Amino acid sequence: MRRSTGIILVAVAAAMWGLDAWIRSPLAHTTAPATIVFGEHVVLVALTLPFLTGAIAELLRLGWRHVLAAFVIGAGSSAIATILFTEAFKVGTGAWLIGVPHPLHPSVHGLRPSLYALGAAVLWALGTVLGRYLARDMRFEHVATLRFAFGLPASAIALLVLGAPAFASRHDSWYIALLAVVTGFLALGLYYYGLRSTPAVAATIAELAFPVSAILVGYFKFGQTLTGWQWVGVATTSLVVALLPARPRDPVEIVPNPAPAPA
Image (cartoon, helix red, strand yellow):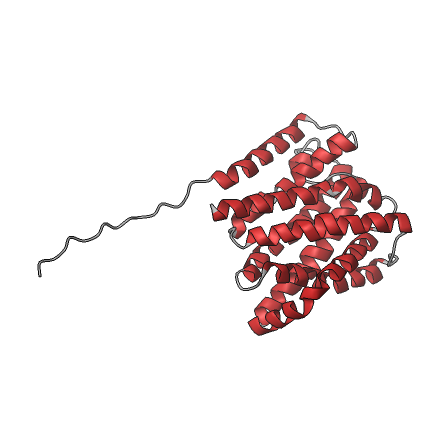
């Protein structure tokens, strides 16, 4: 039951990430992706600032392996992956069967966003494994805090490398803050809480709720059309995620009490 609850929380969090396409897609056409991601991390670090001292102290106590894992999660999974995903919105949607109308014959227009999204997915999958590693020894709010703390300088470096401005317009900044609170702060809180009791492999599969919700937002909000192949991708992915919490429990062998021996 505890594992099933964890899987459900991870899937809900992933679906919330997909819903951010509602805001992120229009933003990607008016603000540079690196600017969006940097702004999100500024808000997220501000929200988790009360936990930062305790999180760093706990991380240093655990040793260099945990420090390296937190760095990869923050710089790779939080900063670089989100920039890649946001960049994908500039030219289209992103997963293979879902984002490419004809998966066996991808066009340049369809291949580019898919590569961006697949690159982001690889970094997110790595972040899932390392996040599970940290969650075994740390409080879930500390893991999330470290993700944002390491992600902020990484996103700042991305600004310099890509030549993007640090801040957006007042209008876009408000929506960036909304993204940070809903799909960052709240969703990642659910995610790391659920990840404590969810195996990394199951969590990675549960995160497939992300592209499903993203493509449904594109269909209902932005009027994107889906081919038969894309509907197959949506249906297959949805079925896998829905059945994941209902997987059979591991068998438990019950050893009967031995017969009492004579005195």
